Every structure is written in structure tokens, then in C-alpha cells.
Length: 148
Ligand SMILES: [Zn+2]
Image (cartoon, protein in one colour):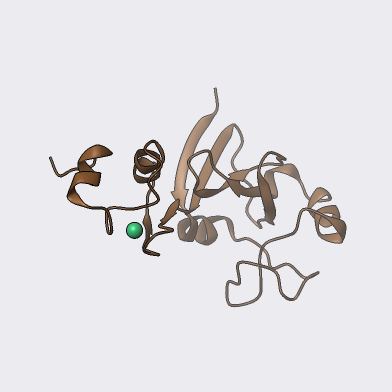
């Protein structure tokens, strides 16, 4: 069974050293030297495919609404690729969190992290386009988010 390692994005950059995308001067994820993300089409993905698999990482959406980097080549929910100088260790599955899921309230425009979609799901279930910032006490009780 593979080892499973989680780390944050900064630690991953320091450890595995993603290379700068030399094909597109406006690539995403500028690290100060240039963008490090490679697109999933054209010359950029062709270049990614030429790299050893252990040096390829996929960037995509997680099931929880956050975004992540995973080692290796993947297609599901992919948004881009990274190539690192340092290869992923063998027999290891890595997951690097890039961002948390954010909740955006249509009613009051409040934005905040909602890592487990607890808030979104609670209001969705009652068809309320509101959030804890703008809901009334009665509505908070209705959706089950009243202060316990
Ligand atoms: Zn709101």
C-alpha cells in the first residue's frame, strides 16, 4: 500500500521545486520568477507528457470544493499541471491543499471559508439564499445552525 502524505502548498514548493512554465509568460501561480502552472492543452500539456511521471503533478478540484495538487498524471477535474525538479518519492500518494472551499452569499455578498460545505448544505436544504451573516435568528434555527 502507498504512503499517503498531505502538505501545504508553500511547503510543497520548497520541497519539490516546481519549474517555471517557459512556454507561456502569463502562466498561473506566479512564484516570483514566472508562472509555474502548465495548461491541459496544446504545447504545454505536450511538454508535461515528456517529463518523467514522478515529476508530474496535477492540479484540480477536490470533492470538497477546495483545490489540490496530486502527484502524477490525472484527468478527472484537472485544471492544470506542475512539473517539479524533485520527483515524488516512490510508492507515495501526495495531496497538497491549494485552497479551501469558499462560500459566497447571494443575498449579502459575504464570503468566507466553508471547508466542509456545512453552511452551503444547511441553507440549500431549505432553499434559503442566505448565510449566517444575514439570516435571522429564526432562519438560523430552521437550518440547524443556531448557536448551541
Ligand atoms: Zn448572507
